[in-house]
Length: 114
Image (cartoon, one colour):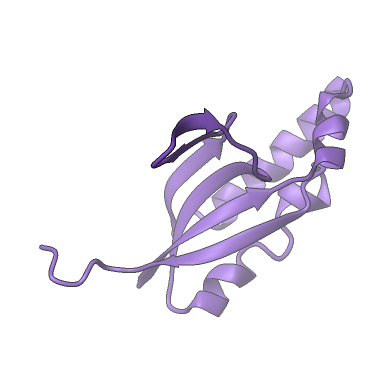
C-alpha cells in the first residue's frame, strides 16, 4: 500500500471560531466523533499525527515568521490516492470542528535511497 500525508486545513475565520469558547458538550461530541473516525480507520492509520503550531520559514535569506493554513496532520496508507482521500469524506475536522478541508498528498519514495 502507498503512504499518504493528510493535512488538516483551516482559515483565519476558522481560527477565530476555534479561539471562541467551546462548550464542554460540543468538545465532548467532537472528540467522540474524532475517536470514532480513528477507530473506524485504524487499519489505515500509520501515524496519528496531531495539531500543528506556528510556522517559521527558512530560506537562503534566513529564518522568519511564516504563515499557512495548516492546522494538523496524519499519515495513512491506502491502495490508491483516491482511496486515501475517501477516508476523509466525513471526517470530524470539517463536519464538527471548524476546519475547512483535508488535503491528501502521496508520500513518494526517494529514487536510489535505501
